[in-house]
Length: 236
Length: 270
Image 1 (cartoon, one colour):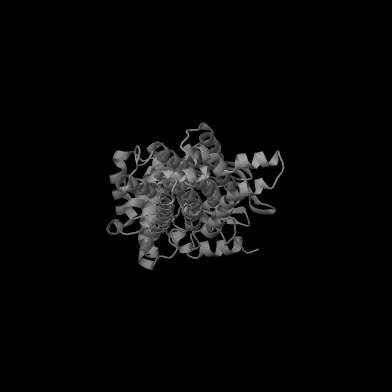
Image 2 (cartoon, one colour):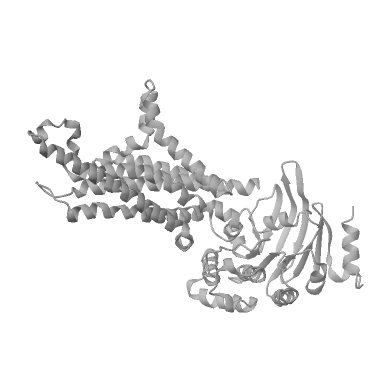
């Protein structure tokens, strides 16, 4: 689903990511981990076509992000760090607008909104303004927006940020249920979440991939395996 | 095409569901009606004076003969003041176009959905165009009021051809201001900065003609050509002229193109 080859991004002299190579298969739920400033958000911004890399290649579903950006973007649902909401629109109006941007067929818009609203538990909020929603609901509307049009790849940047423990669990269950149908790339600081739902882990540190393994081989089956490994890999 | 219209619709909804556009409508209507009343009062005073003088219009210098009819004496002058008023209010409408997207972090949404940047620019501009037409569009009530209650000793009360040409010139100027304002808004995250810079640009443009008068040829002709009041003068007088249409059309196209370049460029520099 994702093929990344020698991907590099430099901001003037600072190298944010340095020759990343990895592939992510279809239907996988991948935890994308790394300390703050390791290059997670940069990688995600490149993979969603928001930002071009300095060099290297990235392909989504076989489409090069910079040669066929429209085709690639049609296959990606993206939740940025901050849910991209327009405070003056209602949740329904907002989801309808995103459907139009994504080119969801007119006849399907209504059922599509209903589907993602049920999936993310925001049916009761559909007619409220997005500007007055609590942080948890905003985050869910952000996820709902990413799911519109059922893109095969979902890229979620810290989707559980700001949620209470119950909402957190609901969102994680939701993401887990998406596995198989969607490929999910999940970035987060919270290792327990990754452990709960991801089968594969990518750890990035100082712009380089330091681990690209299945959860089982990384943790070695130990309860604290992921924490230990994460700290060991990102310590220097 | 569908996305362009979706973006246009969303822009109009955003303008009309927040108080901002309504404040701008109100201020524009209020100020333009003040100007209108002021123009009517001086028109009437002038006519009273002329009627008291023994020779009537024969004593009046030719340059003041525009006051003989309501079209030239009131409406054309009103359009001219509206040009300046537009220059003040347009930045307040255009400032949010892109600056707000970047502040809300919704710019990332626009750039990661399968939408071409040109569709974003066109959609936003059409929305902006709609709102500026609503804002200055209300002033059409003034000639309507005049035609209903005014009178003329010969012919029609108003010469609608001239009125509509001037109105068209006004809308054209509004459309140009929005294109410039949109470009400036695309370069900053701050709406205040966007409004201020757009205003400065429009004001500098207004001052071109004044600057021109103190210069030698060929600079005087160049600046005169570029000044917007010069370009619009024939339309305001009711003469259909293609030159200003081409001139402002090119300016609008240029700024739409610059906006397109600007949002593309940001992806590379961020």
